[in-house]
Image: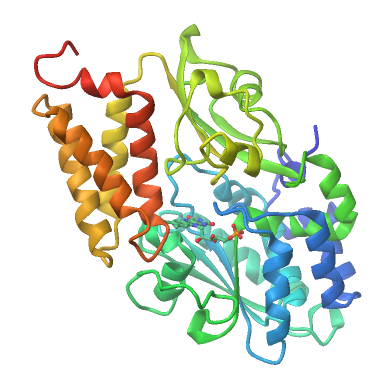
Length: 416
Ligand SMILES: Cc1cc2nc3c(=O)[nH]c(=O)nc-3n(C[C@H](O)[C@H](O)[C@H](O)COP(=O)(O)O)c2cc1C
């Protein structure tokens, strides 16, 4: 099995800087510092590494956008908000291999001429925030970050910033607003953060896992990374598998592994020998797949072609006894609660969807209510500043479309 992020898994005391560097850690940084920043960007472009935060944007292309700002102040932000329900991969890296992240951040910063980085971590991960601060202090003491890193004239400083528990603060511009001390309300784009980010300066922002692949790519080369996965994506991915499986947990598998293999081989199949009803493949905001749609390979394009998305790699498995309207209600409540309220269609619409779902679930719904929900889902999409509008509506709409009979069965006069 090819393991990149898990290479220090089960190593005792893996958070310790001596243990990390003793196993070859920080040698990729040393190698990077001996090369021109542009060469590192080319390497990351060739690796095919794509962002693991949800959108899957090619990392190298993002870095390339920054090169025209080398004379300006450039900020690097690590998105550790990890708010997508069903996702618990970033916490593994930060908790058990924090130096992998710090090394990846420092290389990314060097390549993009950034001298100041931030880790924006979800408030609930308070113990991990403390762990990161300790790791940063240790790395400063060893000269792996801070002034004149490893005796070069390159300096990079990292701060940890704790969020306050808002899902929208995982959206990159909402995160930047929050980091600036304001309410975490996403900005209209363009301009994108690469041109106008933190404090109005060019900013590169990446998910924890994306940055954690960088040391491997620099150490082993773009081809070695690309050779692991399938198709255009390359490398491995961390899959958080939860729900009705025998072995829920975090798994690292090559990109392009089939969803069926992840459920039945990695996660040991469905609990209690029951049948499978549906799978949410990329965190709650990705559209659900039926049990007969799980032969899809976990790849950005193939999942899109199957009408869903790779998202955060958070796979939620639902057995045959699961009520899909029940899941839709949970989703509707979550998104109504998390809407930042900035855009009227989202603020009002997500609450309406929640209200209609509650009516249906308590047996007070009408067939019109289901049609109203479908209309609201369509109208919210495309009329909001950020992609929260899509995240909040597409999953509910697809649940209704694919499992309509279960919603109809909740209406008065119908057998439940
Ligand atoms: C509503 C919403 C929530 C998001 N939450 C997260 C999150 O918790 N963590 C994350 O890394 N990206 C999240 N994203 C994606 C970020 O906006 C951004 O695409 C990502 O940080 C870029 O990093 P990457 O290129 O490494 O994927 C979210 C996006 C949206 C629209």
